[in-house]
Amino acid sequence: MDKIQVGIVGTGIYLPKDIMTAREISKATKGVWSEPAVIDKLGIIQKTIPSKDPKKDGTQEMGALAALDALKNTGIDPLEIDVILSITEEWKEYPLTTSALYIQDRIGALNAWGIDVQNRCCTTVSAMKMAKDMLVADDEINVVMVVGGYRNGDFVDYADKDMSMMFNLGAGGGAIILKKNYGKNSLLGSHIIADGSLSRTAGVAIGGICNPITPANVDEAKKSLRLLDPV
Image (cartoon, rainbow, N blue to C red; front, side, top):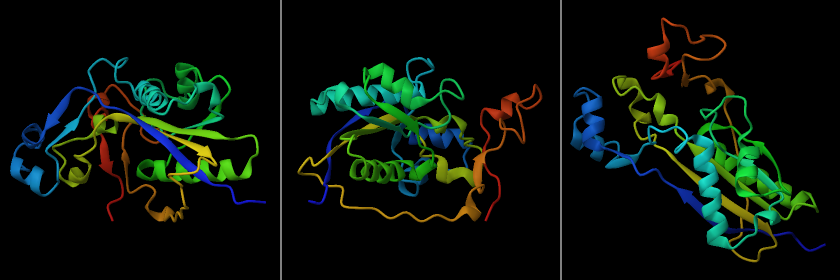
């Protein structure tokens, strides 16, 4: 049997119109970071931020808009898509809803099934590996879309100097379409390693089972991305 090749057909993107500049980030840190330091040390000149209208730049919706852009750029019929691997973040319009299925319905990919993949900054890499493995292993899968939206920057507390490595978190959506035996743009391979001992080093401190939102902490919860277990 000939070796199965998996290629990237094309991509799509969605970026909100609103931006936050290095000067605005500096101001939000209350002088801890100067504008030149934000630019030179953190590498941020400006970043996209979501509209205040959650329906316009919701996490799932931004993923759907990126998916539509990918379909436009590639000429792929949404009915050709067999699987949608959603890399949409957990911070989304409504908790416990399946982002892959929202996007499936939104773009008209009626023949596709989908699942949500969560691995923070490694989600896209993980989903690409999963997509290739599925395309190689399953005769019934020929086209996979990896797609998602992101706006975890909502949780950044710019007054927390320990979280400066998160100041770059912005907002947007991206999509990648992969096809079996496409013939070019080959996904050659991947290898993933993990260290579970760091799984709770950073995260949103308020809003989960261990520390639910209450009337007393509701304001803090909105900006509670923290180092939970500093290394």
